[in-house]
Structure formats: C-alpha cells, structure tokens
Length: 442
Image (cartoon, rainbow, N blue to C red; front, side):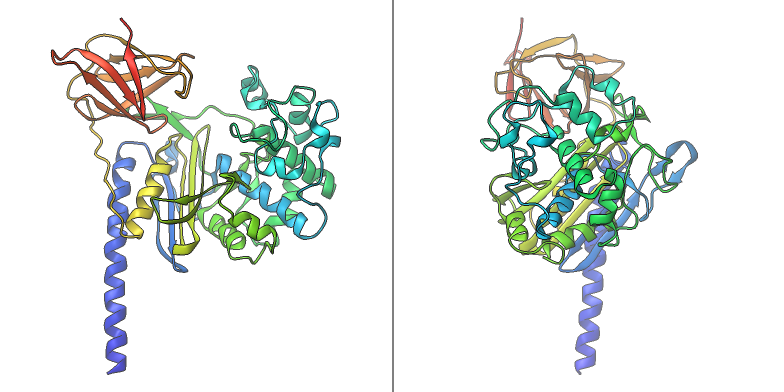
C-alpha cells in the first residue's frame, strides 16, 4: 500500500512538473518568436531545478543553437561577482566595510572618507565614467581598473559618500576591481579566480579581459527595427571591468546564488548584511520587501551591447529564476518576473505581440514629458515608417515600438508600455510611457 501511494505521488508530481514546464515554455515563446529573447532560462524551486531550457542561437550566422553550457556576458549582474569577492575578503578579516579607499583616488577631494561599504552600496558619489562623452571611445580600447579609475580621479563627487544612492555607479565597481588587484597582487581576472571562482568551482565563469573568446560564448545581437536583429557593435569588455565583464552560464550563476544566500560562502555578519532589504541597492542586488511576492526579494538585471540578463531570488519561497539572453533587450526582466509568478501560482499575463500595427501613425507627433521623466522634460517624437512605429529620444536614439493593440505598443529597447490617447474626435492628445504622461506639443 505504501509503495502504491508513493508511486501515485511520484506520477502526480511528474505530471504537475510537466504541466508547469509547458506553462513556462508557452509564456516564453512570444518573446522568442518576435526576436526579443534568445538564451537560457533556469528555474529552481525548493532545491529542485523545475525548468531549464535554451532558445535561439548562440551564433545566428552559423545556426549554432544555445544550450545549457552556453556562456553569456551578463552585464551589470557582474557586480554580484565583484561584491562576493570583496565580501569574502572581509570575512577573512583582510578588509572591513569601514576600510577607506582614498589611496586609490588620491586626486579626488573627499575620497579619503570613502569606504568599501560606500562602493558596495553604490553610495560613493563618484563621477561615472560611463556617462563621459568619450565613453564610446573608451570601449574601443583595452582597459584596466587603473586606467578606468584614472579617468575619474580628480573629478568632484556628486554628493558626500554614504549619504544617498542616485544611480548605478559603474565607477564604484571599477574601483572595487582595482582594490581586488591591490589586495591580491594579481590582475582582476586572476584575482577573481583566486578569491571566488576556484573556491566555488565556477568552472564556466571568467572575467572577459579581451582575450580569445570561449567557443561556448554566445555572440551578441541587437534589435534592428521592430522585428529584426543584427550583430551588436564590438567592444572591449575590459572597459567594463568590475561592473559588467563577467561571462558565465545559468548553472554557474545558480551556484553563486546558493553560495551567497545559503551562508556557505559568506558568514555572519556579511551574510546578514546581504539579506537586509535596506538600503534598496547593495552588493550587486536590488533588495526589497516585495508586495508582489509577499516576501523579501533580491534581484538584478543587466544590459550591455548584445546581451541582457536577469536574476531573481526569493529565499522564503526557495525560488531562483535566471534568464540570460544574447539579444540586447529588457525583455528578460519581464520574462523572469512572469516565470516567478507562474512558479508561485500567482496571476500573470501572457504577452501578445502583433507583427504589424493595426494602423500606422498618420504624421510625426511630438510629446513633452515632465521633469521626473527618465530624461527630464524630454520632448519625444513618435512617427511611422514603412508600417513600423518608432519613438525618437532627445539624443536621437530610436526605440522601435512593438504593437500589442490599437494605439498600444511595447518599447522594444526598454520593454516599457506605450499608449496613445486620443480626444473625442479621434485626434492624438497625449502619450503615456510607463507611468508618465507626455502632452502633445502643437
């Protein structure tokens, strides 16, 4: 009798897992079919991998498919690796959170009071090298932590260290990479290998220092118009050292998540610091008491030329969702959150993307957005060309708009909802982008 009960439970569990896997796959397919996702997805729930599947090509030109061992550049998720290495050195009493780093920035007024904690929490106030007008040129040459830090050393701080979080601090993680080099006497890739990768057996992970690419490393692609793709512009990944240069697999990322959250790699008090939900940003994660999931939630997303990534961890639910893509799009965040809702039995919506808009925009329209918009007081231009609709940003960048209904789209570049409002006569009156309203400019 006991054997029959166990067998029946295993059959039922197997059927449930298969049904859920089909639901996961059905949720992902529209993003794949519309050329907005190509990559790997891994979901672990209660210590069991309940879904792991690959989509699209790691090399579209030669039709080489993505697989479980495909390696992806993971953009800003890389900060988790730099942070973990620094926290491990603190665990070993080689550093403290209060260690000051002024010697790494001798020309920067106020840097003598800046601490390791300020860098890890992205509250340093450092000038951001990524915002420099010549950053595109920086990406075209091999860099080191020292060369990147030299570009901001001497620039004024935006605010006193430790007082607030204003934006993602790429330069802070360049400085942390330099700190790891000084602490170990090795270049950043070797320092990371020694402190983190080797102890955790992350054998498929490395920091891209512009060497020969791994045969398993995915090629990056970027949107071309509303539905097409093209190879991403080549960059020197060493120019993103510490903040976006890691190449890894979904399986290695899962090992890192376990090492961090299970307390097997970090011990108290560092493990406790990671599990705090305030401040919101820290140690390579966004942290919050999520109303959506009803539990403390930790996540990080990343975007860099040709790639996008998303990692979600909910310890109370023992749920990890990892989405790595070799298409530059913000879709992985939307995919990851949707998959988490499915796994937890929460309501979710399946995206319905149309190949063509029911009706193009008749003429170019201009909308003025408020001061708290992503680009303050931005004037955005909406227009249609050859049946496709676009938004032009003030800097000239174009966002292709994927139609989802009459006068409704998704911004393909940033995966935000866009809706055109019309007055009673049917004339355009306002444009809603995410939660912001832009008024028509005559």
